[in-house]
Image 1 (cartoon, helix red, strand yellow):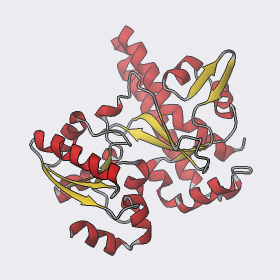
Image 2 (cartoon, rainbow, N blue to C red):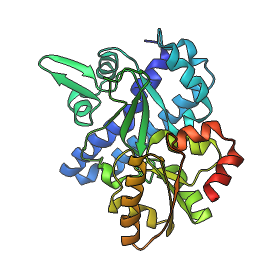
Image 3 (cartoon, rainbow, N blue to C red):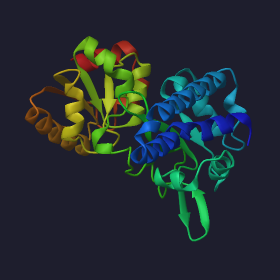
Image 4 (cartoon, helix red, strand yellow):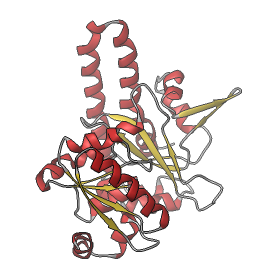
Length: 289
């Protein structure tokens, strides 16, 4: 493993592991709170520095035979630092070994779902996947989404972190940490379904956008939006499943007293795919109309 692979792998878990450790220790001794929070902040700074360093490196040759991965990261290079995107190598336990060698406890790695164990074997849960860190409103990493780059239909397209002491997917909106300022500015929140929807919209210049991370919209998520605006525009796929999800979302949003609009994309399209075909101006016009 080279330096860039270590950055993409090990540094992604630093926040999660230290926060889990801090939480457990704080339950036993609240006097350690200030020291532990300072430690977490120090690690966050190191993670930011690591990703900044990565911007100056040609990452296409950093993934051994994973040429497709290199191409993806080259395309996303300008927003890797913003969203802290990463990649877990497509091997059995490189990530696990590197993490343990760095001094992280296996029990914490397993607790947040980064490592799985079966019999006496340990393996990387997110191997061969692009990593999407899921942030709290204040910017702490609480969990991960992992998207495969392989087309084999037997492989699940997405894996998500399991529920943990710090991650409850029904109470989190992906992208809210980055978009809350624009949501307040424009007094509207665009609501999508997936991680890539948010990132593609962001690249197209529409940044007051969040997603429910591929799960059904919940009342807790709507209450999060209500902190910043009373106006929601749902951006869902134009297929039958997308239409069904939008109707379900409308009911929940209205129940919470918010205003709601719906934009359905053409059948077979979603915010991610449509934003790649249309210019930023065309996308903005389509949404407004």
